[in-house]
Image (tube, rainbow, N blue to C red; front, side, top):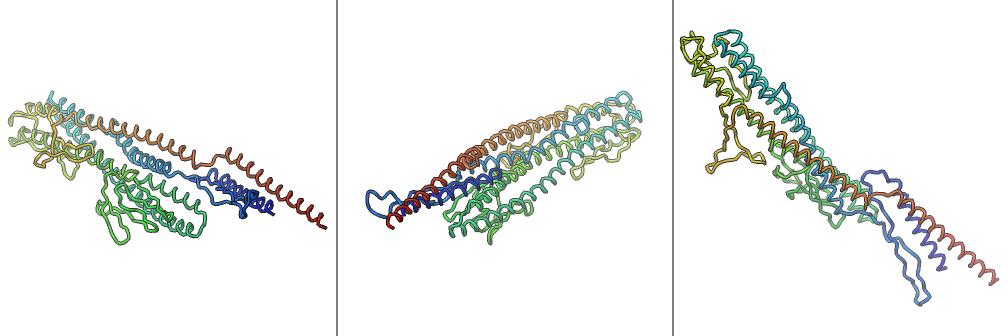
Length: 466
C-alpha cells in the first residue's frame, strides 16, 4: 500500500505542478504577471524502522517568483521617467516658438531700431514716422504673443495636473481595495498571486505619476506613501490628493494636510518643477523686459519735442496688466526733436537709437526658481543690455531643454533595464516552461506507472493466497 500512497502523492504533486505550469504559459504575454512554481517536500515515514522509505511527497505551497528589490527599482525608474517626460513636451514647444522668426523678440527689436534709424535720415517724414509706429506695434505683438504662450502653458499644466491627481486618487483607491482582498484571501488560505500582480501594476502606474515609498506589512497588505512620508494608502484606507487655491492637499480619514511640492517626483513633480524652475521665472523676465522697453522709450521721448508743440514728448508704449501696447500716439507726435522749434532736428531720435545698448534690470533666480535676495531681504537684480536679454533667455531655455532630454533618455534606459531585470526573475520564459511541461508530464506518467506496478503486485499476492 505504501507504493500506491507514494505514487498517488507523486501524481497529485505532478498534477499541481502541471496546473501551475499551464497557468504560467497561459499568462506568458500578460503584463505584470509573476510566474509561479510548486514547493515540493518529502513526507517523512509514519512508521519506525530503517526500511521505512517515506510517505511520498506533498505540495507545501506555491512559490511566487517575486523580488521586492527589483520591483522597487522598476518603480523608481518609472518615477524618474514620468518626471522628465512630463516637462519635455512643454520645453520643446517653448523652444520652437521662441526660436521661430515670427515670434523672436530680438527681430522685433531690430525691426523697431531699423525703423528709427531710417527715420533719422529725414526726421520730419510722415511715412518714415509711420514705419516707426508699425514696427513698435509689431514688437508689442511679439511680446504679447509670447506672454500668451506662457499663459496657455500655465493653463494646460493646471489641467494636466488635475488629471494626474485624478489618476493618483483612482490608483490609490484600487490599491486599498486590493489590499483588503489580499488580506482576506491570505487569512482564508487562498492563493492571492493574481491580486498581488494587479496591485503591483497599480503601484507601478502610480509611481509614474509621483514618487513613492512602499512598505510590506505582515498581513499581506502594502503601505504606500509619498516621498516625504505622508500616507496615500494604509491597509484598506486610501487618501485623496487635490489642489485647493494653489496648495496641494492630502485628505486622509478625518484629517487634511498640506503637501510640500518639492521633490514630488513623477509627472506631478515634473510639472511642478517646470512651472517653478522655468515657466514662472521666464514669465517674470519677459514682463520685466516689456516693462523696461516701455519705461526706457517713454522716458526718452519725454525728453524730446514734436514741433510745433513746445511741451514734452508723449509716451509711445503702454504697459498694462502684463500686456505691452501703444498709447495711440500719432506719427506727428513722436518726439524725435531735441529742439522745440525745429521739426527737422534729430537729437532725441539719436538718443532713442542709443537705447539699444541700454540696460534693463531683471530679477535673479536660483536653480530651483526661487528669487535671490540680499541680506535685507530685497530681491537681487541684474542689469542686462536690452538687445541681449532675449538671447540669454533662449540660450538658457535651450540648455535646460537639452539637459532634460539627456535625463529623459537616461531615465528611459534605466527603466528598460529595470524591466528586463524584473523579467529575469518574475517573467515567464516560454522555453523554460516548455521544458518544465515535459518534465512534469514525465513525472506524472512515472507515478501512474508505479500505481500500475503496485496493482500488478497486489493482484499477484491475492492469486497466491487463493
